[in-house]
Length: 301
Image (cartoon, rainbow, N blue to C red):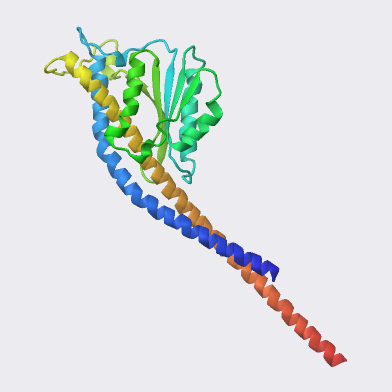
């Protein structure tokens, strides 16, 4: 009977866990709808702006210039790591952290500083633990609660800081490690170069036998004034898109993980009920055998 009691307790525990995972799945599904709508509305705009920015900076000529496309020898760098504040999302945070670490390894040993700016508590905890005591490495956790308010006015503080430090030479290369949202079941962890802005690669540019590709843009009132406003604005939008991508990816990953956990709990319940019925049947059979054996002993006496 002690075995039956233990199985009953396990069944009760698994049912409680299943209720929790099922509730978390529904909450994540509701949040995912809003987050997915936000990134699907912003992404085409951000991608087109990014394409336009690369095109403009690739074909600059004359006196117009900007520091944000200048390729310098890498002495100092920055890696922005965008993770979630909470776990229970499968391998979501782990994959983003792996993408960031691959970029850090690619940068190698730098003569200048390496700043790791963590957005999201999970990334902050990991890099503070594993990189906090390394020489020339600074783990910045001031923005780990940025997901509490994803409004553009709140999030632009980070790209503004990065652009300022790139402009004054603290950073020669800036990367963003984040999760790119595809659908509720698929998210890609990636690390992309944020600064300097990479040139637009086209077949015309790649083909040495053809004339250099030039975009036909008309600047009004002038290149200098437009670039001073346009380039930072587009970079801020690109950064916002990375945050919204990760936000939607987090809820998609958590919804998928909780759905799988609910299914596993259901399967475990089925196995436990079979074990419980077998143990109960065995206990009843033993009681019947004891009664029959006792009756037979009385008759023989």
